[in-house]
Image 1 (cartoon, rainbow, N blue to C red):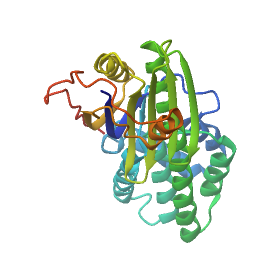
Image 2: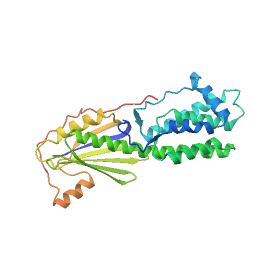
Image 3: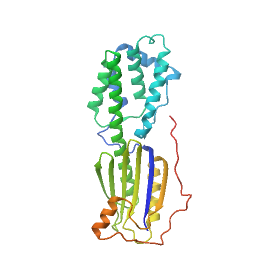
Length: 288
C-alpha cells in the first residue's frame, strides 16, 4: 500500500544553498541609492530612526512564499502613513512614494534571478518625475520582483526536496521544470523505489505533493516518516499537512503513467500501517 503526503500553502523555507544566480533586492537598492534624489536618501535615513517606521525585517535565512508577500502592501501603506505625518514631506507626493517604496523593499528578504532587469526597474522608479510615472514604475517594479522571487522560492523548495530525498537514501535524483506552475522531483533508491514530489505553484499558493511508487514490502510509512522529518528540518513551514493511504492505487497522473508503461496499476501491499488520525499537522504562522 502506498501513501501520499500533501503539504499545502507553503509559507516559508529555510534559505538553504540558494543558487549563485540569485541576488538580493536589498543589495541592489544599496548599489542604486547613489542615483536616488538627495531628498529620498535623507527622508529614508530619517525613517530608519523613526520607531514607528521600522517594521521587523525578515531573517536572511528565511525565504517567504510569494503568497506571504502580500505583506509588502501592508508595509508600503504603513510607510506612507508615517511619511504623511512628516511636515517636510506632506506636500511632496513623489518623494513620499519613492521613499515608502524603497523602505518597503528593504523590509523583506527578497531574492531575484535577473539582477539587471530589477536594477533597471528600480533606477527608473528613482528617476520618475511625475506622480503618474512614479506610481506606474512602483507597480511594475513590485510585480517584477514578486515574479522573480516566486521562481527563486520554487527552486529553493525543489532543492530542499532533493536534499531531503537524498538524506533518506534516495540518492538518484532528477528535477524537471514541467511548466511554470509545476516542478517534478523524481528520487530513486537502490531498490528501484521512486519517491516522487511535485511542487505546484499557483496564484492561490504553493503546494508540495509527494507519493511513493514501487513499494512491495510495507516500508512506505517509514519512508514518509523520514521524508517528512527531513522536510521539517529544512525549515519548510505550511498551513497544513495531510497524509493518507492510497490503497496501492496511484494518485499522481505521472505515477499512473509510469505504471501504465509497466503494465498495470495493481495494489502492492495491503497490510501496511499508516499513522493514526492525529498524525502531526503543521499549522504555523509567520510574525511579520
